[in-house]
Length: 123
Image 1 (cartoon, helix red, strand yellow):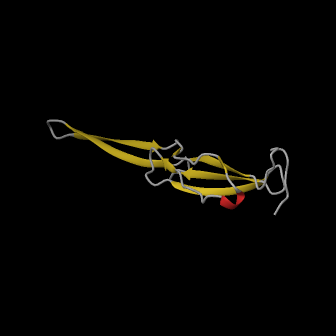
Image 2 (image 1 turned 90 degrees about the horizontal axis):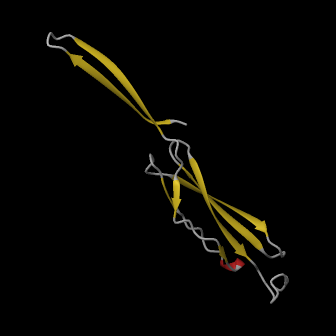
Image 3 (image 1 turned 60 degrees about the horizontal axis):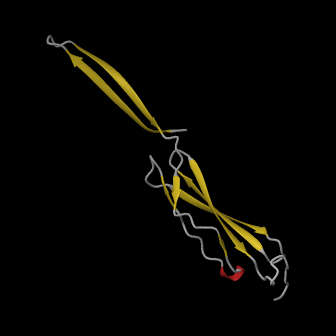
């Protein structure tokens, strides 16, 4: 955890005879709150040939006006050989290294018969 801001204040008191005394005050502001996501795309089911491009959600932070957002995509096999699930995970990182994640799951069934448990291998 890194300080986001250090403030030094010097307080000086002077009496009627011109005598002075000073005291230094150090204030360290620490950011330990992770960014917060908004407008994260919803989970959807799509045709495997119609996977939409990734949208970028918004992220805000209490101490950082320019949060870094990174995207990672992972594909997992589905119930049938042509099916798969695509999980998009966004990671928001603020200047102090605090992180939060949000994800979207895209389910892509390639071909389905009337029985959803039945896999078809047509081309």
